[in-house]
Amino acid sequence: MQSSRGVYSPGLDPLTALGIEARNDEERRRYAELQVKAEAQRTAKELAYQRAYDDAFKRLYPNLMPIASSASQGATASPANQGNGRLAVFVKDDCPECSVRVKALQAQKQPFDVYMVGSQNDDERIRNWAIVSGIDPANVRTRQITLNHDGGRWLGLSLGGELPAVVREVNGQWLRQ
Image 1 (tube, rainbow, N blue to C red):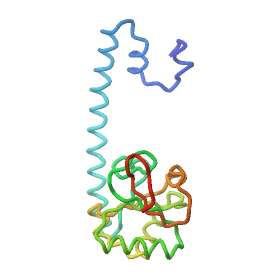
Image 2 (cartoon, one colour):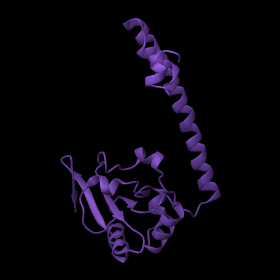
Image 3 (cartoon, one colour):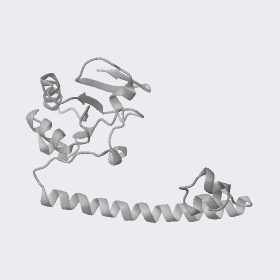
Image 4 (cartoon, rainbow, N blue to C red):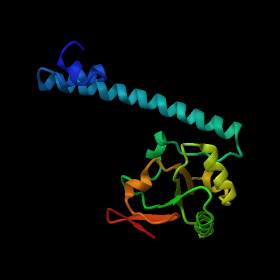
């Protein structure tokens, strides 16, 4: 982009740039519709690939527990943003109390999302912790329990205190349970 838009927004995709710089509402609407169609096609392709990937993972590694990556967090609880009615359980490695608390919740058949603080995005670390903590892989496969990298969420909640921390959103505010 040679205009000032290229300076202000150098990584902007062409349809967005054209829509922003449209000469009138009709032109802006046309670019918006083109972008919506392009995004719908892109999303459909990505979802189809994700389903194929998930199927391949289940087929090739039936005994491994899936870990939610930062990119896929939208599909699970996102405590730093908004709740989904499930408990969020913040744990850390080498924390016997964390394992005890998670075992108790699992025994109650309580659905919850585990967030490992300090996991360094290491899936193997979370898997090993889950195995040592007695999390049933079937509960992970059915998403009764999800395993997630914390990604700074614990700090974002600003609740403080020791781990484990079991929290739930109540009226827009995250509270320890």
